Length: 281
Image (cartoon, rainbow, N blue to C red; front, side):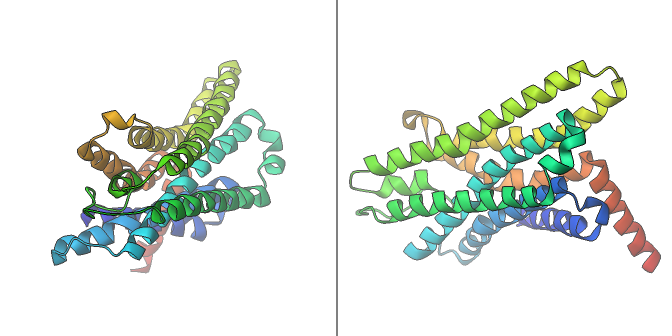
């Protein structure tokens, strides 16, 4: 619950700062606000139910509740994968084509990026959830997990899961490998551009601009790859739980701290709000 409160406070504060400060009304910070919203929804999907089960001692969830939780966490997680990839494109344009930035990444383009992230992930999640929940379940219905994540739920299925596994495999390629390729490509061009810069100050500014996003990318995709792209023979319930805790709880908690501490504009906006509150008091 402490981690949950930190995550909710940090991501809510990031969204409020971006909305309140006119200097942050840019495509880059609009995308950052969407990332914070996704992180906020991610922790809200899993931790409250887990805490309620722990405090009540029931440790149960309805079939419909499990389906809803599965849909929500998969939607938000997929949207974050797509958005982080599109944010790398935003950084590529800002550093490699700064004079064309306002054209290539306008407000409408940023809005379209957010819509694509949400709709694409929701569609993927809906397909996977419908297939998973229509499979036959028999025998034990005890999920070896703290929420309805598909690797734990699919172990309870007593029928053929070939179609579902094929769907998950295709969706993993689309939502993990393709975004990773886009991120690597964008930062490859960025690195090439930075190397050609003559000014040491310009190089420092370029790296400072990308450092927060890169840190979040490594944390998020590293945890997702560990959780979803390991062979089934090497998976254990404990490893699945550790991976899930990291990408569904720890990463959403760290993201606002990373952007607040490493991003000068967000830090200035925070200081401005704190200074205003101090003067008001």
